Length: 132
Image (cartoon, rainbow, N blue to C red; front, top):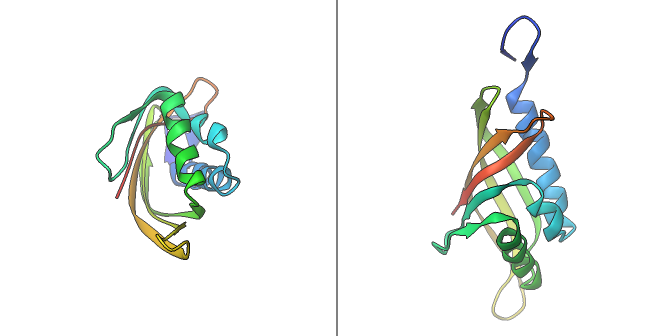
């Protein structure tokens, strides 16, 4: 538990674990709009393609493209988390299933880093998301 004073405390790891579960749920429903809503308006996603994806519309289009190409079954497993009342970070192992050139199911995975900003309502939204 991170103690921020006499009246404010929260568990950053639990919050990020919950954010990861919500993100995985949206991904596994192929809901690109819900995924885009998890990011702040000027967020960046940096995939292994070296493409820089900025803002909700580009983020939604990027994930819609992954869904169209057959990606599903996403899972984030937290490695580490931390932060304070303004900014939090998480690192995770990610896994998903895609389709190979022959249409067969193909496992994918790697490491992801996330930087979250706390919103006025206390929720966390992604500012930066990078993965390999």
